[in-house]
Image (tube, rainbow, N blue to C red; front, side):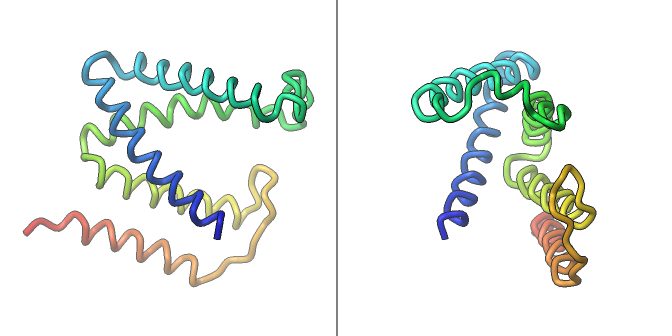
Amino acid sequence: MWGFLIALLSGALMSIQGVFNTGVTRQTSTWLASAWVAFSGFIMAFILWLIFERNQAGIMSLTKIDDKYMLLGGTIGAFITWTVIKSMASLGPAKAVLLIVISQLLVAYLIELFGWFGVEKNQFQITKLIGIIVAIAGFIVFQWEK
């Protein structure tokens, strides 16, 4: 149950953050807004690490990561911020978030299905494919104008 609540909170925060970032972009620029998001996120994460996890994992533990490509999360995050800002500005928050979630669902399922990036490989399930199709159909219905 706790995982569901955290996931719902995550989705809500992502939607709010996307609107905030788009607002900052309107008054500055896309990459400056993205840089601010990354910088302010770094500061907050660093403070929280100092408070809660400093004794658990030191900074040098980053040098011991087995698959070095896993360290690209922050770089990918910059492009995530940019794509969220651009999609919300052109589609509006609701349509953009719906497409983003559908894309996340599809890519996450492919990662599980093929066992990419060290994730445990899962068997194909028609019900999961149907769920993705229903999500896509939901987007189509969501787009209909009166």
